Image 1 (cartoon, rainbow, N blue to C red):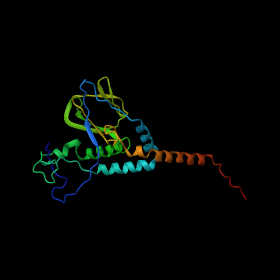
Image 2 (tube, one colour):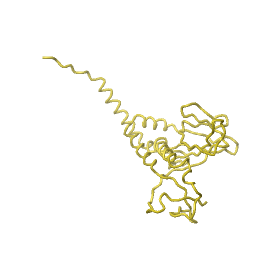
Image 3 (spheres, one colour):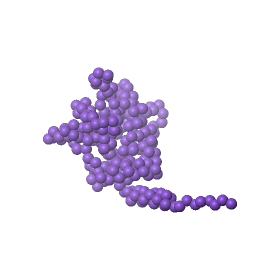
Length: 226
């Protein structure tokens, strides 16, 4: 399917960019009418613990996420062979200034998604129309990232709780896209570098606890006066 848009700098030199390898799938109803399950892996809780307690690991994840936040998202034209064109023939006016909330919102989305993909290996991109003071939907959209701990399904509805209280998402006006790094063993499941480095992170955690315990257990030396 052809997509239209402009390159970030049509007048300048074309810069070859690398891509983040990830999968995405829109959440929808099963054939039976039930919602797609929002699942969470057991190792993801440990991954968040290491991120919150290991400064070295958090620094690396945040560094990569900040680099992702500096990327520019834009819609371009795809040729007959499925390759994006460096100089598309035409594009709908203003589409690249509004897609996913525009450049400022895109930077926040990419940075947030970078942290989620680096720690639990998956997240959800959610978009819905903004509402006015009377609660009516406007022509403006709001896009944000939700973690696997913030989105659940309950009584035939997707429920979002980002710390300010749970609220149901209207299925007919809300877009929910699951983004994840596929496990090479089971591609429907998420994966991150935390899985293969859990032993190292556990060792860092235990060594830190040992040093702290030794420091608190060591008696303080008293200086004797003359």
